[in-house]
Each structure stands twice: as C-alpha cells, then as structure tokens.
Image 1 (cartoon, rainbow, N blue to C red):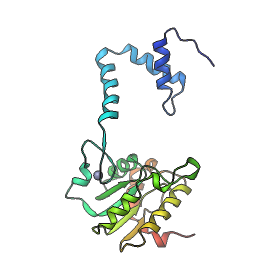
Image 2 (cartoon, rainbow, N blue to C red):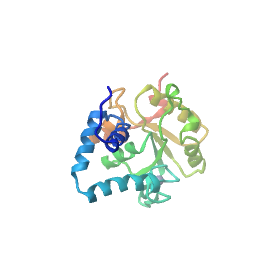
Image 3 (cartoon, helix red, strand yellow):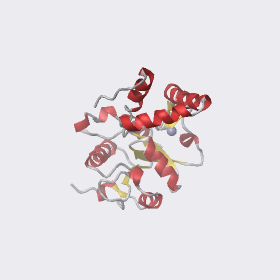
Image 4 (cartoon, rainbow, N blue to C red):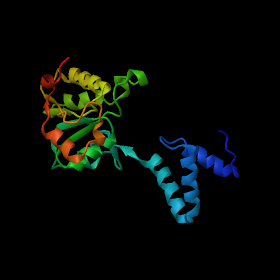
Length: 207
Ligand SMILES: [Zn+2]
C-alpha cells in the first residue's frame, strides 16, 4: 500500500521508524505525530540520546557487556566471585539475571547463539574470548545460561567441548523453564531458582 504523505520530512521519518522491529508504518506514523506534538527540548533529547548511544557506547573488553567504560562495573566489582562466569546470549540476559539478585559471579556475553540458518557460526560469537578467559586459569566454573532452543543446545555443546580441556566445572541452568522459552522472558523467581539449581553439564546433557 502506497500511502501519500503531505510532507517528505514526515515520510522520511516514517520510513526510519518503520525499520525498527515490530514497528509497522501505521505505528511509525502514530509515534512521529506524537513526537511532533512535544516541545523542542523533548525531541532534541530523544534524538541526541540515540546518537550518543550509537557513537559513545562501549562494550566491556572482558565480558562484552554494554558499558560506559572499557571494563564494566560488574567485572570491576571486587565483591563479586571472579572465579565463576555465566555465559549468556545477549545483554538483555545479563540484565534479567542481575534482576534476580541470585548471582554474584561474572558474565560472558556471546553476542548471539550458533544458528546455521541465520548464517551465525562460532567465529561470529565471543566464544574464543571465553576460552581465553578460562585459559588464564582463575576460573572454577562456567555456567551456561542460553535459551532452551535447539540453537541454544548446539551452542552449549560447542562451548562444553571447547572447555573440556580445562579443569573446571561446566554447569547449565536448571530447566524449570519450558523448552523454547527464552530466558529473558522468565520471571525473576524462576530464573533465580534455575541458576541456584544448576546442574553439571555432562550430567544434564543427553544426546
Ligand atoms: Zn565486564
């Protein structure tokens, strides 16, 4: 459907908003008309926060979590257990697990999971950097907290194999969460419990 816009500026803005996931052209138009009714300071702040986010955001060089500095506050926090690493798919999962307040170790953000259909292989993810962290020798346990999907299982197994050479415990969060649920959607109590009730990977994994 080719909607006619009374202004090229409006059409351009709709086009940009409609690029976002889950935003169709109707919603884009509604959001833009809403922004047009706001005062200049609000819209300037909105636009500047996006530009600043994209240009200035950093990723922690240790765990790859989003950060304002080279190393994130979680990695820098001396009261956390630096011998335990929880492996997650994305930054959203770090936020979800932090909200449970049940986990005091560090993280490693993969930046996705292995998904041949989407053309994502191990080399596209932060798996080598995880192995390097473990190889330094100060790690006692790696907890796999990926989605309970086929891709999550594949990635778990790949990482497990990669870490098999090291004398560490590899565990997996308990699957209180039904298969196919992604952990970011789990409620905090369930997610917190699934971390506390984690199991050794080689015991929980059955081909
Ligand atoms: Zn970090």
